[in-house]
Structures are given as C-alpha cells and as structure tokens.
Image 1 (tube, rainbow, N blue to C red):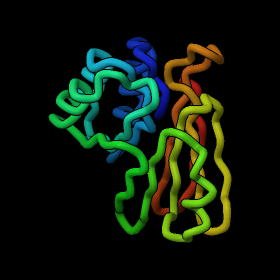
Image 2 (cartoon, rainbow, N blue to C red):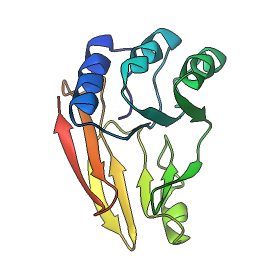
Image 3 (tube, helix red, strand yellow):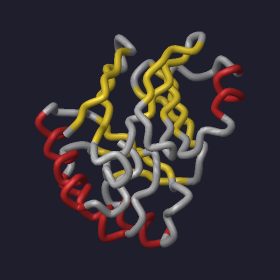
Image 4 (cartoon, rainbow, N blue to C red):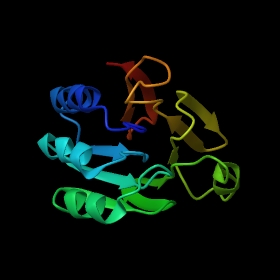
Length: 156
C-alpha cells in the first residue's frame, strides 16, 4: 500500500483486506501523513515495513506508533523477506539506478498515485497506486506472492 494520506476509511478497508488474505507482511511506500492514521494499522494481523513519504511531516510520531508493530525508515529501505531481496522507496526518481544494480528481486514505490506492475530485467517493480484515493477516487493496494513474484492491483 502507499499514499494513504490520512484516509481512515480506506486504511481500514486495506487492513480488513490484508487480514482476510492472511498476509504475512504489509509494505507501505509512504505518505501516511499523520500518526493518528498510522494507528489504524495496529489492527493488522502481521507486521509492516514502511518508508516515510514526502508528505509525512510528523516523522517522530509516525516512528513511535509504527515501532510497536513494524518498521519505518527513510527511503530507500532494503530488506530481505523469504528468499527475496526488496527495495522500498517512496519516490521514483532513483528507481532506474536501483534496478540497474541487479541487487533486488522486488522494488516497491509510491508517490505517483498510479498503479504500476512491470518486470524490468530481473526486478519486479510495483506501485500499488493510492490507498487513500483522493486523486483518482480509487482506493488501491497491491498483493504480491513473493515466491512466484506475481502481483496484482486490488481496488478496495
């Protein structure tokens, strides 16, 4: 998920969806906006890895909330999950450079509010669109099978 932008109803829908699919990890590509919105994610049945977005102003408050059930840091955030190497960013400007390194199986980003799933070389690139739905009117997330490297955009 990405760009939830304080839309509590959309965040709650996303949490229900992820819990219903028994997700093992949720990844948020930034722009929660405020700590009160991040508190909704405590209802997840799994952990979360996330990055700050360009609109996340109260970083200390977000970090405090998310630390109780997951991780948040500045972009880029590289981590392993299962057999896969992930890179999580909010913005997209350096993504091509990251892809060219060949280090990552999956690169997840946000910021553009536009869903994107494509394979570039050996890297699956995913933008879940905007969970908040403020620009497009669509609350979207992506679901990823890290074993098969298949992803789908889900409109909630």
